[in-house]
Image (cartoon, rainbow, N blue to C red; front, side):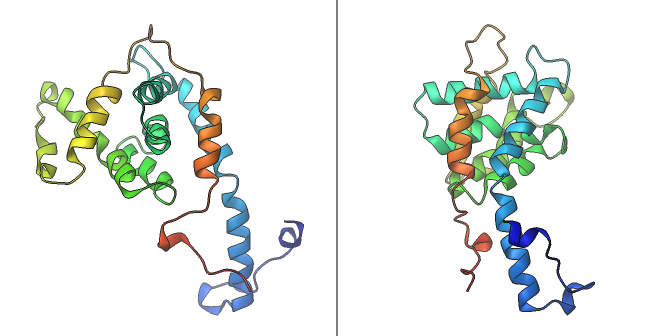
Length: 197
């Protein structure tokens, strides 16, 4: 990537950019995307020191959810989703589910993205009534094709994963999975650029 390192676009306003400028930026962005697995793993490690009050750190919870998913025979994309479903807690505490879904959207099937994006609403079922909220708000999606899958994700794995005695696998056990899925080419057509000529 050394050919990009010293290069810079010619514009000060995007509307003045040339094809050459945007080809340069496309190469630079593709190169930067290769580091996504490392950045996600680092963000997961930071969850070990966030959000007090639970019997596990957010990392411990995430590892437990992923371990439960793996133990239940979930496919790799769902295990990844289980691992990073709360990764947004640190930077987007009030919309962490959408944050996590945005990370995986280009790399996993739509069902998995939807589950991650909606898990916050579906988790409300377990506690929000104690705070005066509507625990059945998730039922607005009752007829959605993935309603049952998201409800199961929360019931079997997410809401059940605050047990400090549960034998969760360490982050290192999931690292190959993170690298495999987040290192593959993005499949969402919105993110696939034409090959560079």
